[in-house]
Amino acid sequence: MSATTRYAAMSRRAAITAAALTAMVALAGCNSGGPGGAAEGDMAMGPEDAKVTVVEYASVTCHVCAAWQAENWDAFKRTYIDTNKVRYVFREIPTPPAEIAVAGFLIARCAGEDKYFDVVHELLSTQEEMRADPRATLFRVGNGAGLSNERIQQCITDEAGMAAIEERAQQARAAGVEGTPTFFVNEEKIITPGSQSGTSLADLSKAIDAELAKN
Image 1 (cartoon, rainbow, N blue to C red):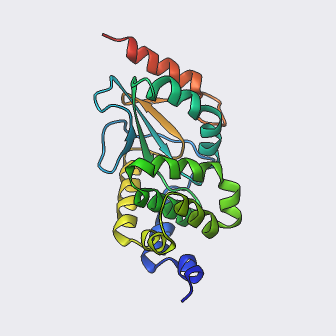
Image 2 (image 1 turned 30 degrees about the vertical axis):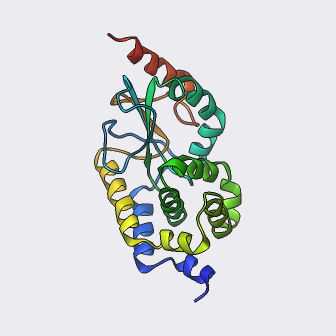
């Protein structure tokens, strides 16, 4: 079986996982909620003892997540993460096409904690390319993170990794997560009423600054 065929099929477990996630996270235009506390498998940036923790639920295949990153990530990181004011936690919620999102997250985790966010942000910024040719994009990004084609193939067919993603998604759903992106600041869900592009940076900053100002 060729690498392309193996990727297209992934594995029986992958297909089941993707189908379950697609049904479970049937997201209406990407919009959500969930807990803001620590959870197993969290990927994070910033000091663990930061006064403020910001949790984002997002997917590499969610177009609203991609737009939020393009418009807000640099300013958010520069203002709050680089200054050690915030502990930023990213939580994976695969959105349709779920099999592509799952594969992207598995590659990011295989790249290691030091490169995880590089892979996630690259996938978010190249969604059009990924929709046109998911295999080529995923392998290109994985190669850029130092992974060989053989290692990428192992990553995207790793049943334990898929099961972990599915479990995290189920936990999020049980906690009330309905879509992406969603932001929590110290356990409080931050919503921008009427927004079609997720929580605004202004509203997120207002909530963060209020928490930072507390004694």
